[in-house]
Image (cartoon, rainbow, N blue to C red; front, top):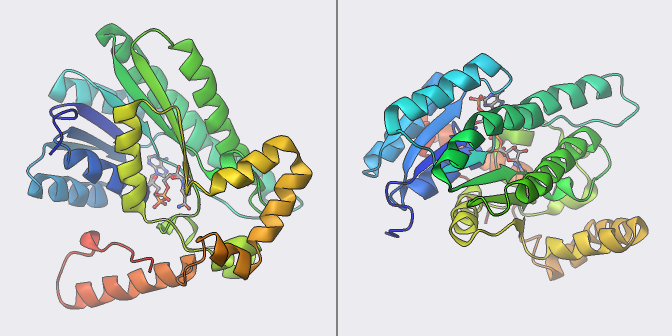
Amino acid sequence: MSTRMNNKVVLVTGASRGIGRDVALAFASHGAKLVLAARSTQRLAQVEKEIHDRGAEALSVPTDVTSQASVQAMVDAAMHRFGRIDVLVNNAGVAKVGVIESATFHDDVSHTLEASVFGMIRVTQQVLPILRRQGSGSIVNMSSVMGRKAFARFGSYAIVMHAVSAFSDALRQEVAGSGIRVSVIHPALTATDLLRDVDEAQMPLAFRHMTPLRSEDVGRAVVTAVRRGTPRVVMPRVANMLLLGEALSPRIGDLIAHALSLRPVARLLGISRGTTYHQAIARRQDDAQIHSISGESTSQVTVGTG
Ligand SMILES: NC(=O)c1ccc[n+]([C@@H]2O[C@H](COP(=O)([O-])OP(=O)(O)OC[C@H]3O[C@@H](n4cnc5c(N)ncnc54)[C@H](OP(=O)(O)O)[C@@H]3O)[C@@H](O)[C@H]2O)c1
């Protein structure tokens, strides 16, 4: 167990499942104390129990990041229990899929912005004065590869993820020299419930045969980013090729995105290794059913991505 995270207090939003849960578990396995925030009380309690079972401390605080009062109460509860916050992971978020011409596009952007961006701003503004008083701390913001390169039908999500990226960029410069470090994480498609209800046909071609990242790996990458103070993490690394192409010219970015939609190219780059996102999610649902029939907790089930 690393000593660098021992007794550090880590606040994770969206900790009730998916990436947030695995971020929390990864910090717990490094000896950190966790503050777990999300809306669903029951799932948070399950994650809290998983952390206690690993011998670490955790406080779950049911929180809606779209409410200022709820965020303030959560940060107050964290300070009351632990007296400090060392790491804030802004991870809570939602996603909507649909073309820009769809009647719901405006509402989709607005809904996603409220949870993923204004939520992040609310929590950061509550926590930042605490980090400044301490003269140290880390803030990690969860963006996406879509936070640097949009894909068709993911316009609302990409707008919001770009905003998370820009916020992180500005914040990193504003806190420079204060002892506070800022990281932004850009994972590619990850095997969580985020897009579970999206029809496979709605996914960009490249995503349909892509093997998703495992949320456990994203969780570990967040811990490493905090320990090293890495300002930006792109997962998998090969996605940097797309982002570099996009930075040079949107035409090159689009060409690379198109190339990724060709299965042989995706295989060659190691991003299509058999199990797709929808297969991974379906497999997890099957596993959850088996576990619930046999009376085991479904919260322990993780996605195997092949
Ligand atoms: N999955 C991917 O492909 C992928 C890729 C790159 C980046 N990301 C980003 O990673 C983050 C986590 O997503 P995920 O994939 O783990 O999705 P997920 O499994 O759907 O988890 C989303 C989490 O956010 C919480 N949340 C949503 N709205 C909230 C609100 N108003 N207040 C408090 N908590 C809220 C949810 O908990 P409750 O419902 O209990 O509130 C849940 O814990 C998101 O920001 C997402 O954009 C995901």
